[in-house]
Image (cartoon, rainbow, N blue to C red; front, side):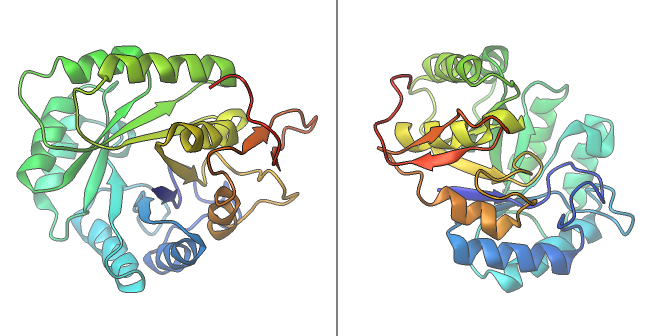
Length: 261
């Protein structure tokens, strides 16, 4: 599964093609679907481009994407910075008139149990975001069973070898406790494409994120989300990413995979 994250938490103007309106999100979602994406993630915005969980704004974004991409799952973020307080996040979820198919929750943030319970009550799938082994421990220690939709392993490191080690440690901790798909991706630009390749080699899902992949492996200019989705396509098991480029861009290679997993 390839998820296209259309805008992330970037500020308006931070990227020349950052979609912030419902129409722009719908156009990018449609292009990404044609390019091979099978799931959409977005951060709805108000008219000033500020992230919001306001019911009307969330509904407008979801309706536009679903009109453009019928049947395609759409998720949103519940990151604490949107509402500033998990209690406000819980209240916002309770007001949704149009619900996303699933939503991400960061286990590193306060109030995650309440946020996940609110999502579960509304029938919204829970994507549990794990950035560290500590987060994995928090998920395992939850006192009540949750109906998880997916586990997101979201590594916020710059060095890929460190990111790979952390990823493997998280996977070891969660083991087979949760019978749900696992998605791997890197939060920092230097590890974006290596993490995509790692996901492909290990048989896990992955995500192409506009907020991190602002420089494509083969593009000198900032790419569209469609371009990013298309660049993911060759990264199937048996192929790898060459990280030797001096300018920090990554190139695809047909040669043998690196020895590190």
